[in-house]
Length: 249
Image 1 (cartoon, rainbow, N blue to C red):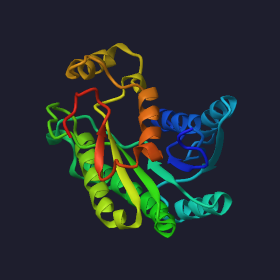
Image 2: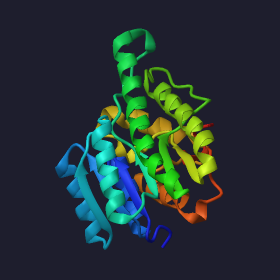
Image 3: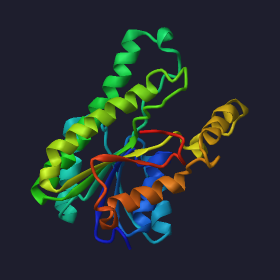
Image 4: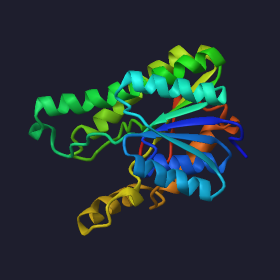
């Protein structure tokens, strides 16, 4: 298995994307630690992983609370001996409106929250990875330089900001053997609510792909597991495009 004897921490592990990544990691042998604020959602993912023969543990952690994040990851390392993979996919505050219609305070607060949680969780993992001289830090969303969609509000800008943060981490952590990779996606269609209002958005993602396909949650989990594994050891300081060609990072 690609991730046998590896320890992975997933913030937002009870969500659709976090759960898909957890499934992918666990299927490849990783011991998965799911962190989030909603116990029931975390346990649903953990139960699914255990039923499939994988290893999963849960913890209620606010990924915006630096003390809670540090206490949790210290406990994980004390229990397992290392933290090999970390990714933060907590729910972001997405404001899908034209920029002119978004209040300055709401825009700044949403972007600030996204950067704050990413900084907190990455710092916590990096502290241990530097000591180990190894580790993989994954990010999700990515920077799409060809973004042509109006009404994206703070969403793509937030992804771009996190990608800039990831690039700086790459420069500072590469000398310690730590890899940093972003999963670039144009949207995961099977996370969209199954309602008529979302049909147009779903189809636009498919139409933007030269292959007329869209990445699924299963695709996200599979690619994340490969990138985080030793098979992906040559991939770092970059984005991995899982948009079926719809995005241009």
